[in-house]
Image (cartoon, rainbow, N blue to C red):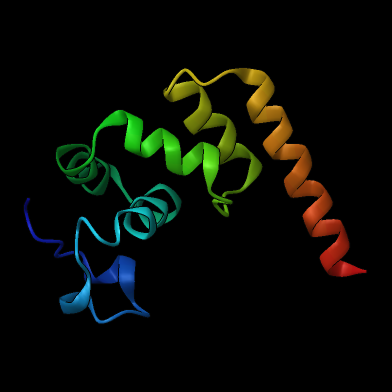
Length: 98
């Protein structure tokens, strides 16, 4: 695997200590949230589509509704799952502010 070199995505982390395999979930999430096309291309070289989808579906990726909609459509994930994630995110935000 190619080493991760994009320090601007990991401003809060010592990039030399990131392991591409061991920290895959965090790396994928960060690229989905803040990455550009070259970051996305790097991610696709490192991880397969199923690994990326798993992060979107299983983990509570902190994406805005527009990004959730984009990535779910891009990876052809069932729209009902996207709606469920958006509703859960709305509820989560509501309870945080109360």
